[in-house]
Image (cartoon, rainbow, N blue to C red; front, side, top):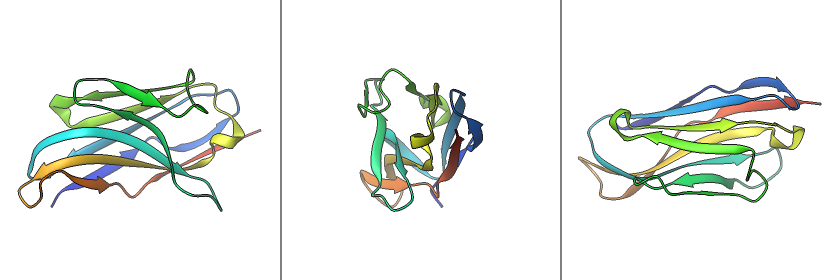
Length: 120
């Protein structure tokens, strides 16, 4: 069974830092783009950052300069380093990965999410 499992969320004060991790497991043949999305209460899910297999990254303008996405292809893991956190960063953060598995070609998979709460 292919799955994405996030970790690293929690409660932090404004100005603090957190590092999220997301590990993919199962019968995976390859992983293309990996990314992080977030959904705040009452809002739509939005893209935070995405990284290609080769390491090219793009960020939402709201997090550029504060967040950094990286990945370890050998471990099928993507990370999100979040610095200078603001209360408006409070959301459930979801991992996403486009994977070719034993069942599907180029299918987007989602993790269950990890809650990040930034207090003022």
